[in-house]
Amino acid sequence: MFRKYILPLIFVTAVTSLFGQKVIDTSLVQFSGMVVIEEGDQLIPLPFANVYIKSTYRGTYTNLDGFFTIVGKKGDIVVFSSLGYKDIEYTIPDTIQESRYTIYQIMSADTFMLPETVVYPWPSREYFTIEFLAMDVNDKLQQQAEENLSERTLARIAEYTPSDGLGNSQNYFRQKADSYVYNGQLKPQNIFNPLAWAKFFKAWKQGKFKKQDEDK
Image (cartoon, rainbow, N blue to C red):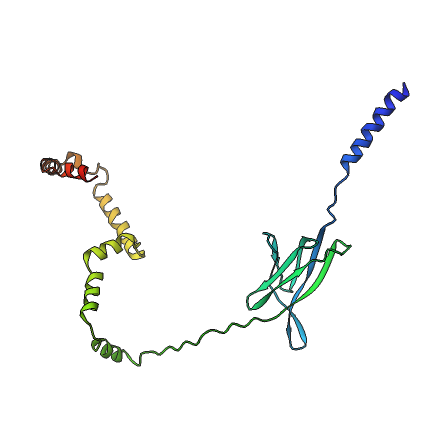
């Protein structure tokens, strides 16, 4: 009878112990260190440098002291980048035995040579007037100006150009003023307007609605 109860108890205890053990991923590494730059004979911490695992969305950045820490795997490629410095790729060694790894990463400056741009200001406002009046306006330029200032072009531009703050405020006050005129009563509707009905019947007799249907 003792054997009848003790054997199942030993089996349950062994299974519980087996499933209760946590599986530890030995490939994970707490990767930490300092990102610095060289100034003379000194190493200066580089704050807010980007530190991320390549081909992933995991990353971090250095604090004011240039310190960073991130969890990676052995063999991962860590990218160090900062504006004005060359990007550096560092591979976490896959031969380390510890779960923590620390480095000092030195960044080197990256120089960009931009083309020279020379800006010449107008000598005076009066000089601008002289140049403007002396400008040769040929027929092609005049035709282009008339096209840009035509009602069709301006209407198309106004359709897609948002109003500024002044225009929006004026439109709002006009709507409020219009609503105050009919305060306490119903606002007039064109369905009760005989002139609107007369205009509708006239357009109907002229076949304007029929033409619209044929165009569609």
